[in-house]
Length: 217
Image (cartoon, rainbow, N blue to C red; front, side, top):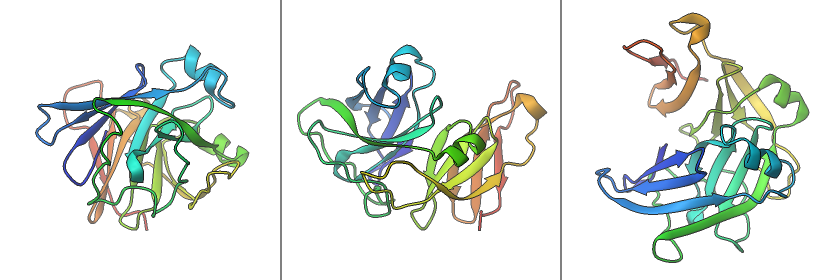
């Protein structure tokens, strides 16, 4: 889930491969954006089609109505989706929607499809260290952070990433501390607020499931 500066909530549904855009009161569905991945898409199309539990796992709004989605695994990769025919923007502070920015309106009523415009797998070195991708977040400087449940790690993606860059690298990473529940608990959600990093984790029992960490640097 992500929000824009107008308070809209963007909810990513992994299996159906779509994004629901809700108004700030969470009462009205403004539009539905289908994330279309062709089976012959290089790198991940076949896996996307066959495994509906290894698709988009985190998202951030971008300028121009584009969406940045991270594929969970097999392989972990960052994908820029946008209206078919749009030029890719790449990833960086100038292309990711600023905290106060508003999601661009759809080109046609009701929303519509978004196609793959560009994608970046993790470099081989970092693909071994970051085994899954489960959420995305921006820090106060507009830098891109990725949370890995399997690796129990927060990784900062090296940006900017040009549309034609062959892969993504990580310029720093941090281990998530031991969670209540031990190995049964895995970090699944990431949010940065002034002075703290919030990590949400799976909890098999009722109770608190948010870990508050000090700023990363």
